Length: 282
Image (cartoon, rainbow, N blue to C red; front, side, top):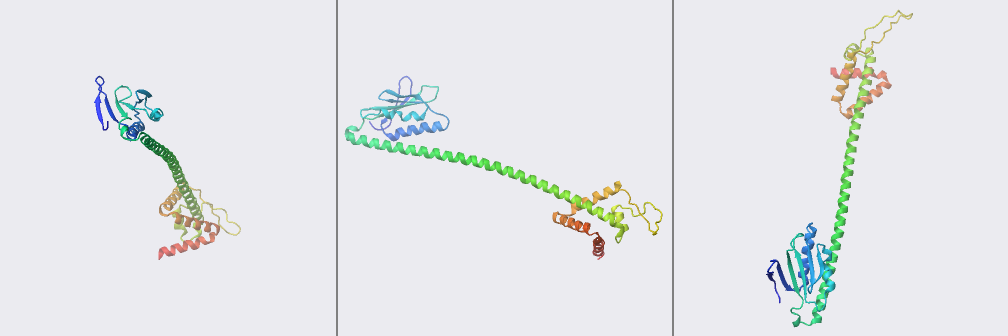
């Protein structure tokens, strides 16, 4: 009897679907169970062959194919019970008749054809399952490599930021040292430069003789240097602040280079100051 029929048992009102046996229909049931299991909601089922329970109630899809071991040439019916939920006995019965329509076909040819179809379909399913498993492994490995790369990138960024802060601190410290050296160099030579009184006043240096010592036999007068005061310190800090505000990194390096040269050859200081005054007057 071909086609799809649906009827209900008198007491339980559970549907029964009766069809002629076709492997594609059974494979469809198996895929349905597999999809629900993949979603985390496995569905209970049972399998009967000619009224004998071959697969007891379970939700393990891996046991679905066990019924094939009991299929014979004389098998008349295979039934699959799919339960509505884990806590209920309500189910839908799919009953497949294997004897209908065989009287019109050579029995041996039909059996061989069905076997070839079953084998081909099973091999295809096995290959598909294997390919899916392999792709999942590759995907998981790629996800792990991506996480490691992101962590490494974060570590590199933190290290770069740390190095930038350290380098900036070194440059500022170098600028402080250069400013102090320049201040001390100009202050110590202010009296010997053109316009020295004005420059000394700007730098907070007292050029007035602090103490008068007895005249030496040669007739020279000696001066003693005034001790640094709070005003001197403020002048140094002001000059340092101006350098940091007005000079960028290349300019600051240039200033330090000039300071180094003048420190080694202080006789050029007067020349530099005179040149600056000439340019300012122009």
